[in-house]
Image (cartoon, rainbow, N blue to C red):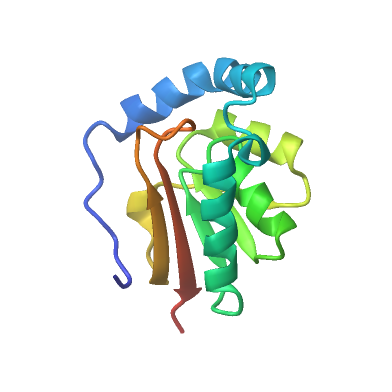
Length: 141
């Protein structure tokens, strides 16, 4: 772990455009099925609660690939100083609309310059809401 900037992937624009295309349907699916609702998924809620307890007082949390902000908002509700970033401007529009009390920015995980990762939580792609990576990061002075 540590500060890093990764070479810009060649397909970054294609990936951004694909997430922008599916963002509206994804948000509608979450609302209709509850699939991405952490409160409705006991194992995910338990993981997020344990994570929130573990990072208490360690610094701000950066939810990388936050999508429509579900995980970020849950962590903020738990008292964590969390913010989210996503490659997709459309996903960030939804996140800001759904969770106006939270901070969200459009950014790539490959552009984490100036941040030092001090802890992370990764949930697999097979999880009901897909892959989740939550980082506890501190800005380098």
